[in-house]
Image (cartoon, rainbow, N blue to C red):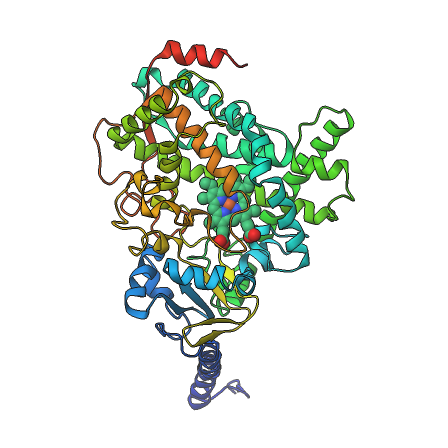
Length: 536
Ligand code: HEM
């Protein structure tokens, strides 16, 4: 007798089985998509124009592969100065002109003072950490306290006390250049000295410590860690990518991928932990220096010496230091663009050199130049900030209360992008905006008192704008006084230092130049050596 399979499904029941297996998830997905579209629809700001985009993803595909800030600037031509765009499930209000920026961030300053919460940064990277940096903290009492301490440590008066540091760091740059430039025959990677300068500035302000040699960046474990971790954080803070922030559906999919071993599910949290851990090491070192009375004045030191004076918790103090290190990234990128621009504009260098000579020729041989005021170099510094805008969408902002614009009421908790790039290209206040013209900032010009958007605007503007501007000024003056900068291959390229065509990555709103090498030819080696010898 042949064996009988009692429960063998007939062909029909197999078909039913397969149909149900396919149908149920498809139906659930459709229900989810429908519900999600309702949510996305409700999140739109009534009476504010803006594209609707695609289901689920909104305008993300339309922005993908574009230079986001420039694309949004172009969209303003169609939708107006202020419009809304949906990035997945997030509604973002984009502000594209100087008039609109003043209306929202100055006249409604209190209401636009906050920062959004991002899934990747706040929920994943910071998951186990006590704090976020100031620049990524929503507006509350703690944020107010931290910002106040940072701002008073970096205000115009305090900046005076940092001038010796700025002189020292810009001279250190010249020492490195003189040693490595090979009389201008070898092109140097400008990222290395720019990074050293920027990290030293942040380390000094925060912990009273600095890096002596560029080589340490590849040999010293804590510095290697700072660089890796800060670059990762910078990538994870990027607003134009990190789609998990905007499309909730991706989050469980990523968890499944991590569970299946297809991606590293611990990476994000580990970056947050590593950031806290390197700061803890720097702080421990500073505590030892304080105990030995060998510490240098710095923000952490001031608070550690007198913990009750500022009313900050340990976590809040740490948050201030996280913020100082994040600032290093922007200074570095600005310095890189500036070197490239100067290398491709010999006339600009000569004009600047002449301006130093005419204002005060002793500055050409003086080791300390940070105190000086050469109007043209100040204008050059401002124009470099305007022309390149290294943080093209500033840092993402959020409304803290209702904001009004042209009949639309933008509710509290809405994400807002200040398109600093578009504001800097606003022809209403910057005629011929695509031309690099330091002259526009000279006192005689009508634009000279315009706001410079490189540092953002409003209640959450860069707390270190005075210090950063002075630091850039000091480097530019010293560089121009002692070196001629030339393109790496001798060819003057119109694209290398172009803020759109010269980009390394189009979509990144923190912009870096594609070309990184420049030749530095000493103007007069003996004069530079003598100047450097005046100070240890
Ligand atoms: C060329 C150099 C720099 C540029 C272009 C720059 C630019 C910016 C921009 C655009 C913002 C956001 C402003 C806004 O949302 O309106 C910002 C915020 C901030 N910057 Fe800078 N920055 C620079 C250097 C620094 C340095 C050196 C530090 C620290 C030592 C620093 C600390 C901060 C902090 C703490 C914030 C957050 C402010 C807040 O959210 O309340 N920045 N910066």
